[in-house]
Image 1: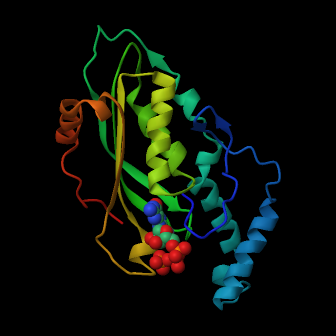
Image 2: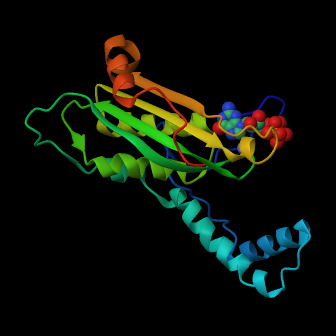
Length: 221
Ligand SMILES: Nc1nc2c(ncn2[C@@H]2O[C@H](COP(=O)(O)OP(=O)(O)OP(=O)(O)O)[C@@H](O)[C@H]2O)c(=O)[nH]1
Ligand SMILES: [Zn+2]
């Protein structure tokens, strides 16, 4: 998302058609450089990075970042390409709901925690359900804006599975709003991306919303 009044920056990540894939950066800093940056932040916050409790912290933070941002190395297309056709003509809605979502606000580099609900209407191919959760993670474990995250998940399922429709809803709390800034805990941002039958057929959309239930704030932050 480009905020009004700010200059546009090139999007991060490899692209294929409409899909944003992993990172293709070749100018990635070294681990030592990343650890030095954490040390600078510790100093800047006012602490002593050489005291015993902080001595190993830069290394820990960089290892944590490898986990938090594993999505840049993930390949959602490969995940979704593992499909099977032998499902006895099953053509009803498939919904994976309440998928734990852990993402990171690209403005403040703090967590976005919530739930994703993913549904699709298969045409010929169905995908293993864990792959839907993996695709959520592949896009969530990056610096994100929730609207973009929601669209990337739906677009990847549409492009690879070519189903009759795709629906993605994300409800999440942004720590940039709960622990800083406006300080509003208990607020959930709800975003959705409806494609194909979910966009054009009100009954399909309603069925999905009924299965998913009303967006709530029953997730830990
Ligand atoms: N639409 C949208 N906005 C987001 C998301 N994550 C963070 N934001 C908002 O992005 C905006 C960034 O605004 P800025 O004015 O540049 O940053 P800021 O001065 O830190 O703003 P405050 O958070 O209001 O203190 C804030 O209003 C955030 O709440 C998101 O996923 N979607
Ligand atoms: Zn934020």
